[in-house]
Image (cartoon, rainbow, N blue to C red):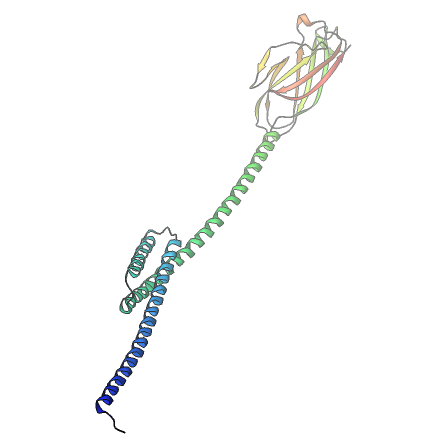
Length: 294
């Protein structure tokens, strides 16, 4: 068999070209897949960095603190993080650029760790302060309740002392008297009686203020008219028409008091019936009694 050298050379060249094209195709495909995989890796890493930066910004927004210095530092960190995120989103993916942002993210994390540790410490301090404030408020409310209770007790005590310090009297009695040959003797005959003697006992009371006490006697006849009308004495919110007045010096001891009430000329002779006698200290009634005249 005769082989044409020229034809053989062509076949060899064509074969070599086919092999070269095949190798180049395989290499190109492999390189493309590698580039795509590399680009996907970069995009994935870029998204991770963006996500972490976004989370950091969200955490900044969630923090509320009254400390001006820490608040200013948080605002600066938030601003720097936003700038990093915006710059990362605008740039095309590149491993060297991504590495730069990852390093920047790492540095921000280090700063944030110290910053948020301070924030957490301040939060803990604020919680303790709030708890102390609540305890102090509760203690204050308790103290106010106790003070209110004490004030009420003091008011009741003052009222009790005031009530206990009032002048009191007992053993009220009254008797009619007539004039008999320049003397006076007891009588129950209305036509003969010209005066009525009123007696009573002031009780012992160490709480009552010692000193002069003005006592008033009011006698009402059966027709409800005041016997021996001396006019009216006015007090703060009332007035009293009285028949007689007596001032005694009270020294906190048992004191016997008697006084005569002479009927006016135009009232004599007295009418028959029951005469009602009341004794007052100022405008307060100490007690009463009665006497019947025939």
